Image (tube, rainbow, N blue to C red; front, top):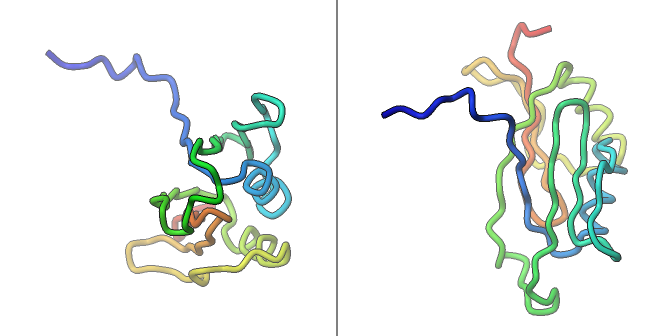
Length: 131
């Protein structure tokens, strides 16, 4: 028996974060995402969007004081872009530290990487020759 692939609609990447407001502000103010949804008051869950890209943030339940910076397992998200050079310039100008510089790789991608406040890796890339 095979599974009908047409049953899948879309996905949501959910990142655990220590402090929702700090992470939400990073994605909104530094990376250009807009807040599409927040849950609870104060918010413990948020959905951020940039065009067809959506990232969900979920504040973890463990008290922040008990968490060491390395106690969470960082995630890697690869975000495809239409103009990686322009995005790199804008992200760098917003004050975000670039953890891996903009470069072209022999596998046909031009990309750079940043880390969010919780250490999650965000790689932004564009295929070489893609318009």
